[in-house]
Length: 162
Image (cartoon, rainbow, N blue to C red; front, side):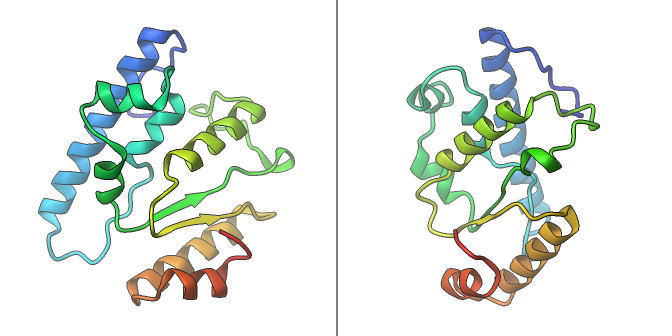
């Protein structure tokens, strides 16, 4: 959102903003993949299905509106790492881009998790008492992915549950 996408919450604004984010995300992913053809790993802060959490209509309307489907979107990503929202005690509202209350953030977190259900290599990195620990776990998971470890190996070694 710091790139200039509006944060209006009326129906039309939500639809148009999420469509713009979806297409921008896809184009950026495609150009990065094209430029970095020999790159081992491309990490995105957000994936195409994250928009479903902000979409004002049922999920099927999202797919119809964007002329896509869940299978096609999931196939775009080899791995999905979902970093869970912090607990209420650690939820930081000092970031001006963050406009959600804690309860809204939790709801969005759950919707994003649901949107990515079914991805064969989805890892959920739970909240930790400090952000540095969560980033350390994320870094270890990324290194394991680069070392071609399996989902099972990564889950057993770094996560309590997925």
